[in-house]
Each structure stands twice: as C-alpha cells, then as structure tokens.
Image 1 (cartoon, rainbow, N blue to C red):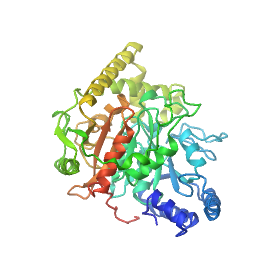
Image 2 (cartoon, helix red, strand yellow):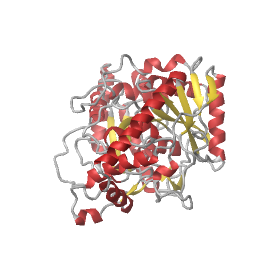
Image 3 (cartoon, rainbow, N blue to C red):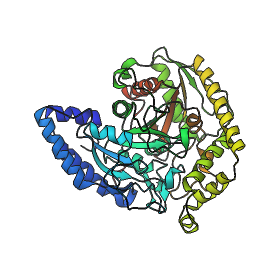
Image 4 (cartoon, one colour):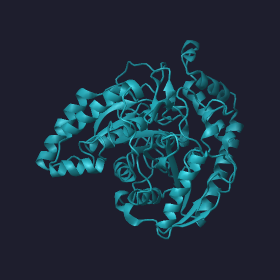
Length: 466
C-alpha cells in the first residue's frame, strides 16, 4: 500500500478496495520505521492525520470526496507554513512560540482537496544548500545508501516519497532543490514555471524560489500541480490559472517534438560515466518514441557568479536581523555566504540581474528551435552525507556540482528530474527535462511518455531501516 501512487490510491478509494484510514496508518508506520536511519522528518502529525483520514473515509463512503487528492497522505517541507505547528526552516534561530495558524498557498489548496498531512520534512537551514543537514534537525540520508546524502534542499521530502511515507510531497526549489534530491533518491520532481504555484510568505531569495511537487511519477505530479497551481491573493507574482488540467495533457506523447540533448552543456561539465550512460539511454528512448533528437547545447556559459550574487544576497537578507548570539547558531557555511552576500552593492546585484535577463533571452531564442532541452539532472550520484561538496572535488560551494539545475531558476523555466535507472553502485540517476516558460505541460507530457515506455521508473530502494 505504501508503494501506490496517489492516482492509484484515489482509484482504490473510489472502488472501495481500501480506506484512507488504512493508507494513512501505513504511511505513518513507514515514516516511523525509516526515521531512525534516514531522518526525513522534523515532525509527524499522527493524531491529526488519523482524524482527517477518518473524515475522508466518511466522505468516500458517501461518494462525496472533497477534491482530487482526498485521503492521500502528503508531506510538506519545513520551509512552507502548515497551520497547527511551527515552521522552523531547519534553524535554531526561529522561535517555536507563535500562533502558527496559517497555511502556505500550496498547503491550503491541498487541504481544500482533502489531502491528509502526515508530517513536516527536513531542510538545510533556510533551504540554503543542495544537501540536507541543519543545526536544527541533523543529517538526512539517502534511502539507497544511508552513508550518502539525500541531496537537498528538499531532501527530507525526497526520502519520504522514495521510502513510501506518502506518495506526494511539497518541496521548494531555488537552485535545484526539488530536482537535486529527486535525482539522488530516484523519484520524480518538477520545478514549475515561476509563479505557477503561489508562494507566501515571499522568499528572501526572490524570484529564484519555486514551489513544486515531489512524487513517485509524472502523472502524480500533474495531479498535484492541478491542485496547487493557480492564483492566491497573497502572492502578487502568481500566474493566472492554467487553461486546462495538467493531467489532461499527459497523453500526447513525444512524437514530433524537437528535443535538444546537451550531455555536458557544451563540454563545460564533467559527467560521471554511469550517469552519462543512463541519460544517453533515456534520450535514445525519447527518439524511439518519435521525438526528433539532436545533440545541441544552449547558448550560455555557466552563470555561477551571477547566481551567487543573487543567492548570497538573499541569504544575507534572511539573517540580517539576527543578533551576534543568534548568528553563532547558524550553519557555518550559511554564515559564510551571508557575510559574502552582505558585501555586495546594489550595482553588483543589478549586474547579476542583467546576466539573468540575458540568460532568459538566450533560452527564449533556444526554444524557438527546440521544444525541449534534456540534460543530466546532476553530473554525479549521491556522495557522502554530512558535507556540502564531495570530498576531494575541489568545489567550494554546492553550486559546483549542480551546474545543470540553477540556471533554470534564473530563467524561471519549468524543469523536471526523471529517474532513469541506477549506476554501477546501485545509486539513482536523474534525467532533466526543460521547456520554455509556461510549457509545464510539455515537461510533464514527455516525462509521462518515458514512464509509459518503461524508460523512466523508480527502482525501489532497499527496505532496510537501520
């Protein structure tokens, strides 16, 4: 039961094959079982979840479900507000006291559709890096090898979905933070077009920050996006509702689509052989399904310095009101980038914005020739847990090993990570699919075609709990 998708659960509820109470109990049991070894949760909400599951079961008994995901277990990254408990954002500087009586827009939409929240998942402090460890909640580990990282910053969500503690999770992505852990943990994740999913409170990282679904497959992500997308009065930058349902657009296939395959961004990125081979096989799968595929690289050089200016400035903004004692409580790496971010001038920031706008222009022109861009999600598989960068890599910051992800936060394009197999060490590999802004439907459609053809799949992680 813990390995079923949300769509399968809803179908089972409709047919009376099982009840939301059974499903939620199984998800909670699985969450408790994996927590000692994987550390995916900061809080489980078992009592509340079981109350909501019983209410859902009664609605299904009457044939009156509240919405598209009534009775489906959902987890939420502890960056997003969820009423009834604190949102600590991985930081010992956030006060537990408070009313905590408001949902983030995406959480509110899921609640309206009858979702059952089983817990809050781990994040690095304020979601600042591409792995998940924090002073507040410790280290989150990889379901396939607990000596390795889950990735981040939505690592707890990825691990929870991979291990069966609910098929749906809400993550956030400012530089790859749903796609990185999805690739490392063998699940699907979508960073939608900026504004497709409303965000409140506004992120200090500004318009780099997206909210996205983390799921077992593309069909569940489309279902979840149907629920959480649209407008919310609290987010001035939210897009208008989509013209149709994303689930209705899944079945178009890829025949005739123009696909650019960039294995290394024009030789800029060294990619592990096992990753390169798995990605190439999946690209061949797209071609076999009728897509027109050719090797072609987007016209940009790595914009890491501009991204750092935007990202580090945002981190400095998050922490600017902390006193000396509170600053000592911060993750040392976060403290470093905050100090650097505080030294940037307004002109430095605007120069980075210029780089970002030029990147957006270049990608807009690129998509006049190609419907989709495919790349590895990451050039590597999961490395040792508890560090920001792989030992011996020479990288200073997490952006060194995530060159395929953060550019598309700068350009605000939809981008997904699709699991396309394991490397020689049994670790998951992700394929990234990118489309022009507002073409989330194309990303989901191509990913779904790969699942339907068996090219994309989630290889179940070992069921160990220690």
